[in-house]
Amino acid sequence: MVGLAGSFSNTVLQYPFKLLYPLSSLSTKLTILPTIRQHHYPRKPQSQFFCADFCAPLSANFSTTHINSSKIHVSSMENRDNLVVLGIETSCDDTAAAVVRGNGEILSQVISSQADLLAQYGGVAPKMAEEAHSRAINQVTQSALDKAHLTAKDLSAVAVTIGPGLSLCLRVGVRKAREIAGSFQLPIVGVHHMEAHALVVRLTDRNVQFPFMALLISGGHNLLILARDLGHYIQLGTTIDDAIGEAYDKIAKWLGLDMRKSGGPAIEELAREGDPESIKFKTPMKHHKDCNFSFAGLKTQVRLAIESKDIDAEISLSSASSQDRKSRADIAASFQVVSGGVASNQYVRTRLDQIAKSKGLQLVCPPPSLCTDNGVMVAWTGLEHFRMGRFDPPPPADEPDDMMYDIRPRWPLGEEYAEGRSEARSLRKARMHPSLTSLIQGSAQ
Image (cartoon, helix red, strand yellow):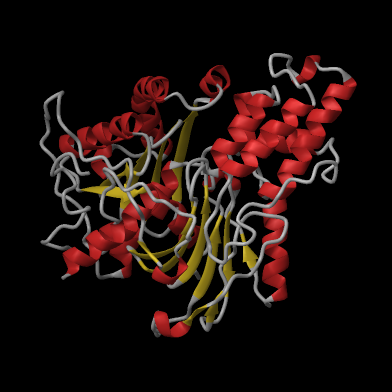
């Protein structure tokens, strides 16, 4: 997943589905919260998994959430394996495309980074990001096809992220996907960004079956979900204020770090030089017995610590005195411990691995290349839904330039777990699209 770290791991834990043990936060003490007992979610017949993953409609274009009433059924395994889908991802600050075959073979993966823009603006600037996507999208999609040694005529469908994300950026990917699908009369699948992050583990480890639990951490999102089935998710927890990505980017900027890597890797690198015990930051949400996250208060604590050390962000780290550098490193290290670590997430992985082993579970991580925002996860999620007949027919070959596309900047993945709502949470629901889960369940009825 994109954001602060540039690389967030996806983690899978296999377990017998008797109790679910959600993790409270990315804190030093990864507390096991009150359990959600089995009777809330009836047991399914197949083998079951626990997974932790580290990561208002505008028109009728995807009006049924890529559910086509005249469903196709790809019945034979041979046909399923031979499906080929192009996935396009432009939800934030990376332009990505990939081609994936139905058997899980990744035929190509291309990503155009906006690292220079991140450094220039100290984070994602939506308008600048949109322009960068527009400049890169044609080359990225064509390169994905070329590297797969295919043309658009060889595709079975096109999948594209339609939300959540930045509306200006989402529009670029949707426009390109519809252009390709319309020109070659291909079905099109609208993909939920966070579902794609959750499902990529089923590509890298084909033994993962529903249900499983997923911890999704990215620059803009923090979610703990129970994946009951494809398109059926229960939201156990989320951030009540800032996402951890925003906290990392802001703190890296206040520390005068090089933002070309984005905040997470920059802080993790500096933290190696510091003393993690030098500053005692308070652990967020420590006394809340739920699965939600909060980083706004922690961000304020760090800002006050930086001000107390008289650190000048205008002075780059490379130009700082040895004492100034040590102060910055100590703050980075102390923040890293309380927030849980980002970047390659070695701290997070280590803590999750300890919890997994204590429960007799195995930790499985997809490669880092599939943990940032990428086209592979979009193509794979598109494949999963396409096999179920959830897609839209080919759009018109020549749509008007002022076409109002169905993009969903604020689009929940699943319904909230009623008994896990935080008293501290005040969810802003204005202009929020109905969740993916509710739309799919509604169409099934």
